[in-house]
Length: 199
Length: 199
DNA sequence: TGTAATTTAAAACGAACGTTCTAAAACGCA
DNA sequence: TGCGTTTTAGAACGTTCGTTTTAAATTACA
Image 1: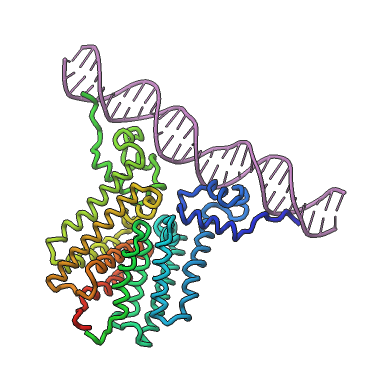
Image 2: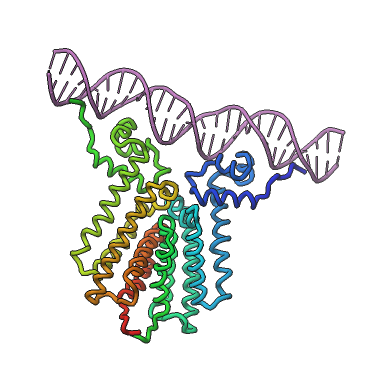
């Protein structure tokens, strides 16, 4: 009943993600996006609305396919202590092979967009709460089966792991050095392992 | 021999710092700066060169008066273990009273400017190296006088503290909650205290 | 007091910004 | 085969960008 789209919406959204991810919101123009996505600006506005709406779609896509995917792969499929370790090992590995220094789009968004936009503030905060909850579930399970030290509360341990995660993401963006990132997580893991009955 | 400046260079630089700090590089225009600094764009260009040069001056000013000042106040004046604690307590306090959510200008710069600008990459990386070195000196001194556990190497401990610092700075920008930030550092301090001979 | 030097104010520069408009093109259905 | 509808391509909208220019104002020194 009408002329059909000449592009796949998810495919071009992925291209928009790449661009926003690497250059951020302000430094990415509609013309940049049009070139990268292989569309005219009219098509972009027709399919996604304005620039902010497209960025929102891109961020949601990123969150679902990075963090969401990671939690889904590890939680339940691995013992809690190993799930945490696998999570951080993957973050470190990704950070070290991130030659374009894109970092984590959620962290980028947390610093560039969220502070001045209540909607994005809510979105980013919500994801961070979910990450924290994932860590807390892992630590609680580890407490129950004795594979994680109960020297610290699961709440505090989860908070620390969340802080470490964000710290790695920032640090890797300017100093992507293996010794630094791997050395950073060693004390944190030592804390997971240290036996409380040794005190 | 010529018409004198009508403004104090350091005073207007501080105003530029505030603006860049809160809104970042891209989202701050020369006209914004001119209004905030109370100058015309011609005066800005005459005194500071182009926008990027002014941002560089602003970042240097920020680094000297925040991190540089903090290290100078704590190191030497406090025992190593207390120096680290005072450092983090001040970071948490500043983060909680940061109602404008400006965060840390160095971290903001690390994510917005440094990845696409080799000069700023070098500047930011250099400061992070200095922060790490400050932590390492504290941990080494604590190892010597027995106030810090030697369960972890000073190198790794300093790396972890650097990661925690950056993590707090990011987290506080979207979730400035006292329980979260204070809970985050508790396990890290526990690691400083845990006695290695207990294993 | 006149001259050289510098800073001001304000307008102006071309380029790029986000967004919209105008037509032509491409489909399903009558 | 037309009709209604949507998507295309590309020009165009007004605004804002970083930066420079023009000319008046202000000083120290001869």
